[in-house]
Image 1 (cartoon, helix red, strand yellow):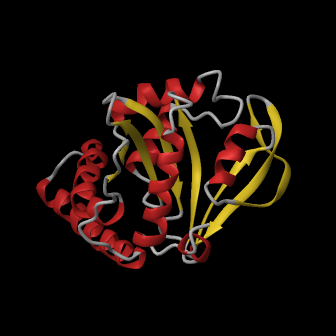
Image 2 (image 1 turned 90 degrees about the horizontal axis):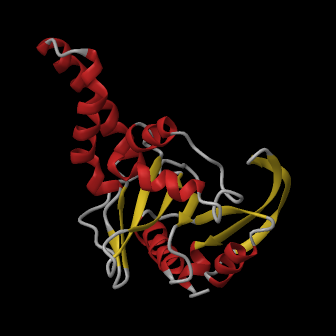
Image 3 (image 1 turned 180 degrees about the vertical axis):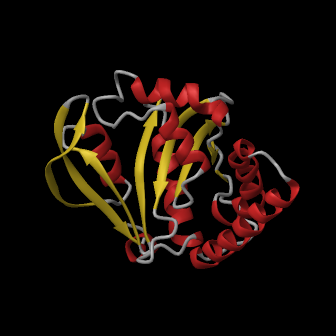
Length: 224
């Protein structure tokens, strides 16, 4: 099941974010709070105000997905750089991950937790929360525990969230050409190959070609 208390449309989130940001900084100036503390304080306030409308916890009987915290970063970096994952995904620095967690309101940085093991088993980046074309991107995903169905369960929850809660018309991703395991998983989850971008990304010093894949709301509603 996917739990959600209520939903805010992207444009409402943007307006509220702008208003609260301006009020927040005026208040800080009036209180004479040091500038170096502002990003940390604002991130906590943003989470309290907007997290329910944007990034509720998703769960089923096997996993739950929640917002990544800075305490998760050692696990995220280990998983990202693991030899089974690094040939297929771009590597981020700690600062890039922190920016995605704290500052980028168009992106969700999420961690997948196994209910049985009670530990993180993967993570994902979801981009396009404010996309005016209602197109959401699974920007990146990697798992430390493979072959146990966690990736498939993540896709089930992600599709439900994108199409039933975020009113997306299209959910898309890219996958490295030689990552057959991931490509087969996405195809079995209803994603269609849209085309091949030749040598479009640079991973571990090599140019890699990537397949673009997507699933549409109509296809999801029809059970494809």
